[in-house]
Image 1 (tube, rainbow, N blue to C red):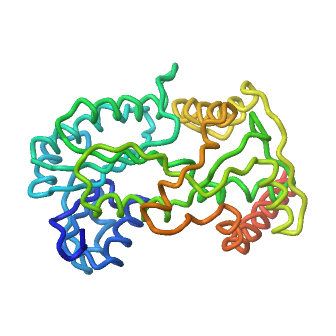
Image 2 (cartoon, helix red, strand yellow; image 1 turned 180 degrees about the vertical axis):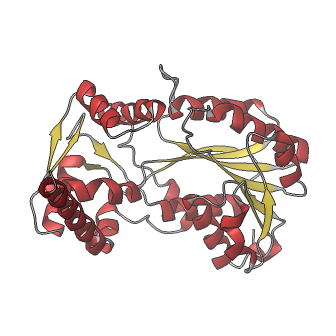
Length: 313
């Protein structure tokens, strides 16, 4: 499908980080019939200037979804974000699927996650698992794209490891096939525009799996320091996450991520991303190398804050 020949395509959650990258890719490809759906319309005003149509849509308001999806044949359904009260994504996702069917949408590209499964207590993995089942039970065509862990998340966690020379995890030797959020956006757009009409489930991963300890060694060399990744128990990890004020339901999802990594669920490597975008996705090492200056700067600022805090006591 050529972008200029495409019918209107829509992106939900368009004001988020992944959503904006998807919009950027659609515009880069020359798509002229792009609709950005969000409950935060003001955050998308810059895209309106580039010809993107803005529509209000809230996954918690089915009527807004039916109106937003009108006239759309294919859409990217970005999974909804976590909320402070732990509102389940599942019902919101079902609302979106039902609205898409009612509006006559022909195909949904759904951004799922690696290793969806029922969990107790409930986590995002449980929500993705049952959302995939809801898509399977619907009458609509779909592409389920299971994004592996974003390399981008390391930009938040690594400065502390660089500053103090140590990070922790349940399984330091377990590997992860990180993929960048930008490459996932390219994959999502490729699946949106390729005209596929059936149903497919694709694991979207980076080009290779890297253990956290190997990654720590690489980051240490990159930033001229020493970094190690040490084991931490689940109990201590949960307590540490609670201490920094993380919401309880997000803590459980984080623990589920760590458990899945330890079980090898996130070490899977496939060629799906490369097939869709026509090249190998960027490696986590190359990604971090491009962000070396930001990592070093963030680590230095963190150390400075700690020193100032200690001096003020």
